[in-house]
Image (cartoon, rainbow, N blue to C red; front, side, top):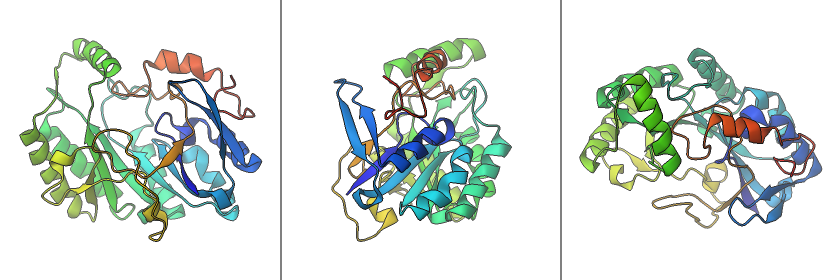
Length: 289
């Protein structure tokens, strides 16, 4: 039994739902190791799958297929990212009101317990200081109240591609992005936890152990026990301070077309758009290579 991550590398629910369902019906898919280049076959048979973890900003294209997934015996839960940033940071994200409406629809169809809100990543800058996040988070939490029980957050990681993309945006919009020290992270996370609690939403820190205090809990984003308390798969962190269980990610880098400037999985929107042309909904892997 294994968990399927669909996917940290791209938004399968938003852009590749027909491919995913074709692979579920076939009983397997393939994924290519982005570092070694090897291709692996992954079973999607329900008796060999502990569950599916969907990571998405816009699950609407997958919603019509959820009854079929259940009928086939699959268990699943969702991470849905809603940050509400300006277009400079999230150039092609769903319009905020639409994103929230779809979140409500998904929660009603699945369960608030199985739809996690990701306010992720937190980016601090001259335009998005801590006060901005407190107000923005409070407004979003109010609109998501009753539709989720958990919010997972992290602070942006300044990978090479992220630094380059944010530097370009900083010149365009006239601001400076900062990597906050521990005290700033702790204070902001503690306040967000307090705000979330007033709306019935608990706060979980993803790879931010310094902030695990004052009501903030450690996140286990890939979590077999969320689907079944008796299903205790072994831990397999993907990076420092990660609390995830072991899983197989079936996505591919540079294929998400939402164009988020801070993304670790996509170099540029243009690169993702070009690479996405290699996709076929009938291929075993996300990219028909």
